[in-house]
Image 1 (cartoon, helix red, strand yellow):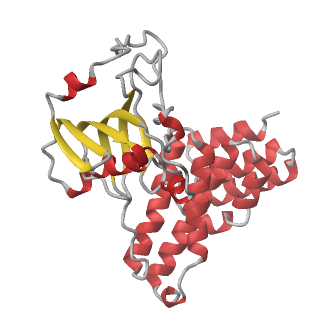
Image 2 (cartoon, rainbow, N blue to C red):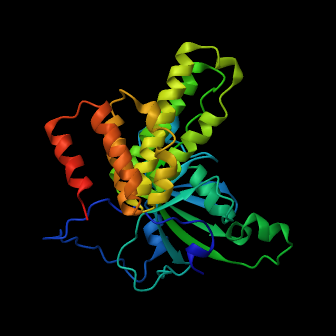
Length: 317
């Protein structure tokens, strides 16, 4: 059996930038095809988690942080080596064990023994586990009345990282609503910087959806009104830029044009005029492009550099 058929594994996130020239040479440690498991495990302290799940402690982290202890909601980055009862490597030809990510809250079935094994560990721990009988099946398989066979496996688990889900903000308070609005923008910006424009667009849209559900009790609060207005303009501006990167110019126009008048004297006013005019050029709407060109040059005090930019785009063919 292959471990990937038992529980949810996610690919490790790729680095945003990969150095193409002179890539580092990584020396891989080739795993032995077979191990004498009795001899290997005899040197480690054994703990019986239950009659069909034995833990052998290879290394125990000294961390005492509760956030690093695995629980039912944790997200884990780990390495997992799988061997048959005779010590043979389950995945033949594997030179090294790749790091993988799982969520303990995933609805994808886990082998019961692996879930119990994870719950006995924390960040930095390394341990072997011997699983047998019903511990080799998922809870769903057991509940379905499957005939339990005598199966045994060994798993070496190394916990590289443990993260816990953030506690949701109490959105009944204005301060927390303002923090949440800012988070949508920050997260969107992070995706944008990685050139993940679709993900950034979705994050900005979530922020706009959040604004649409603004509680009535804040409608008379001047601070809340101004914060909501500024967030609407900033998120819309960023959303439009993502749409431009995705070459959806008509949709970007539908976002920017209704709001351009509300951006008067904002730091991003000139930038959004440039975006709007550029989109009209891309959609061959020269009359509207000229209209907003006259408007921005009349209403805004442009720097010499900005004047040159608008002049360039006006006569762009």
